Image (tube, rainbow, N blue to C red; front, side, top):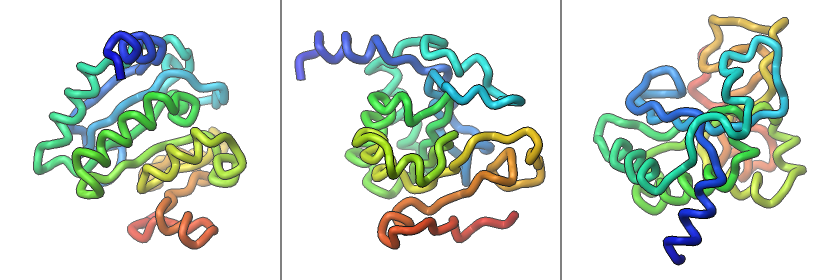
Length: 182
């Protein structure tokens, strides 16, 4: 694709933040891309700034290349997409997920958090379904302050689930991640 078109297309998509080599956004050492924009506005949200679709910086080829370089480290288990709401910034999400699959196959896993539930994502648009098909683990559901439980593994509230996406798609039903402890 022409570089001018790519630069123009990517400049319209924002990322709130990128954090390499962290331990909190999924299993193992992760590279986390925080995508901008979220309509849910959950009370108690830990990332209020990222609710704005124009918060942060434009997604660039340089940032994508940096993410791939960081993921290439042997000790990094995978990529995590958070937000904001990753499934409303699918242009960036699909692009980076496809690049991860192209570069690493399934040697690096992809996690994503979403305020959407599994069923909502399955009933939605083709872009959300495409992005879902590229990830390994989905933490679904809106954060609910009255169900907040800081002892939960990789979740903020007890209504959220950690879903094994490939197994769930194959079974046509939600399959919970087999390493769930609490």
